[in-house]
Length: 295
Image 1 (cartoon, rainbow, N blue to C red):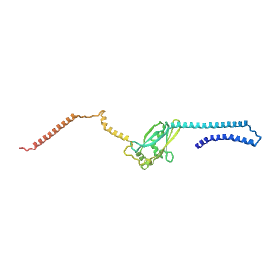
Image 2 (cartoon, rainbow, N blue to C red):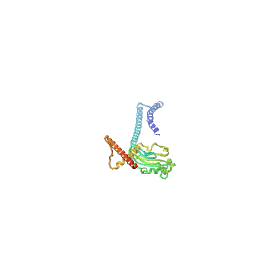
Image 3 (cartoon, rainbow, N blue to C red):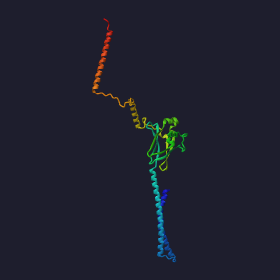
Image 4 (cartoon, helix red, strand yellow):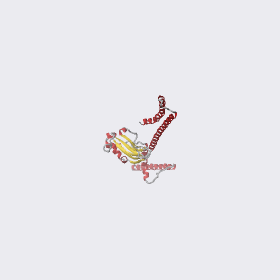
């Protein structure tokens, strides 16, 4: 419809111009033929030029009006384009997504982000069932899960440019306990996000959540994030050195040995071996004396 109206406005000046040019010619031709047919009408050069001048004046006035009208339409179109560019330069874009926690794929986090070009104000959330009806805690368990975070229940006043809010949302163990093992992957809900830009212009996004889409997904290893695995290894090292730090000293006790210490240690070991052999010989002689018969 818009393209048709634009085409009509574009063709209108040409149609009017052709009419303005052809109309005087038709008029002059009529006068000439009328003079030939009716000898009572006298057509002089002065009267003919007067008619042509009058028609030209009217034609110029009509063309001026059409030009002014087209200029006005062009100006209105430019203003609308500038307003649209200005709105896009400050338009927020609030989105919500779910992703596995870095601890385990059985735990899921919710992420709220402003990916737009301006601040988002009066951010609100609402829930719908798959049939379009309002979802409540009574008819959809996921509403209760989301409303554990006050952000989804009460909304937030503003969300800055590039700002991200991330929080733990649910564990599949808890979900299985609440809805039953057979109903875990039947959970569905539509999350609708309402927000405004700095001038109060309203916007809306939505997210369809269907747990059947993630059924059968698995990962190798316990954690989904390698950084978390590194963290756990560092935590093990901390537990190893924890007894050292509990003593109140922030230094490790280290026994160092040089070559002389090694030689001394070896000599002491030889002396201990000699003493041990001497004790064994002494024990043997004592036993022999005890069992020797009297002469």
